[in-house]
Image (cartoon, rainbow, N blue to C red; front, side, top):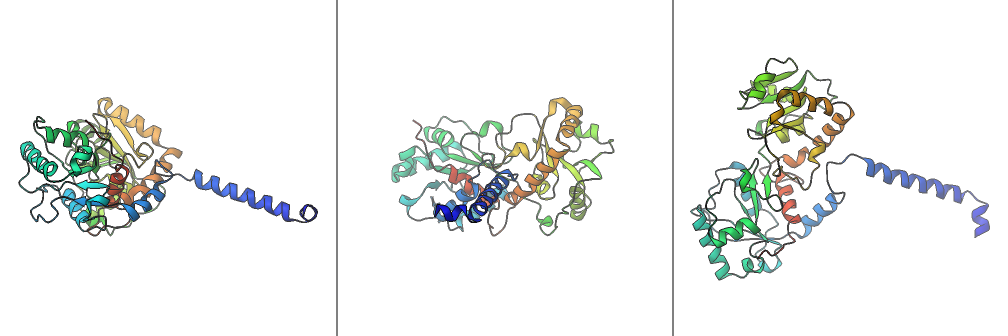
Length: 352
């Protein structure tokens, strides 16, 4: 056999195949990815196959006071999803669906006390394998059951959240609803030679920073576009889309989709970014402190231009499908990504 190998072209062919295989692996690894983990797709598929959620109070027709449309959409999508189980013993997580009249901390505490009295599941982890929706619930935390809820259970909030109401190591945030009228607009996939360096649209257009940019020909600052076609065109022709973190940030996912790199002006850290434990936010968006004013903003834009800009734009467009809310959930959309984050939270720790 050794003589055969030495006297034939098998060895060179095998070496060529080996080199090609190594090159392919390296090429795949080198491809820019918006995900923090290379196992994202493997874990996501495993979630689809195995994740089970038990819902308390499932038959109650008057569910929580869903003042937030995105909160209602998540709730309804979950109740119609294949992830639910009627067998609590096979559930990874438990969904606390509070009745409509459960709004104060005392009422919430009483609701949880009934759960721990009637059923064994809360007491096993003191609520650490439970999750609930809460975008604006505040109040005194003097009730033991409410303290356990806030300390242990996963809270799903609306983005951006109230700073004191978000615990980074466990809580999640819902990405904003995307403008429905842009659903049928196809982004123009072009190199940004752009008419505009930066574009801002929102009710906070009268802020000091926006005021300073208003007369700069490289920026367009407006309270609202003339129509959705106009909005889509401006997103497609702008290199950066500006957002005030403490203002209206609903368009971040849309900016990603149209290849407009978000620049977020913030007055504090942002632990509540949607999918922060899944996506490489620092490589898809630019973050600027509000204290530096326009000078710091322009400096950040300058650093983000060039080769880094095209990479940020590409990663953002790859991740944009995760920010889309559908009436009927689709693979990898916002609903499934929130569930994926819950799936990552299924390994619970008991807090005493």
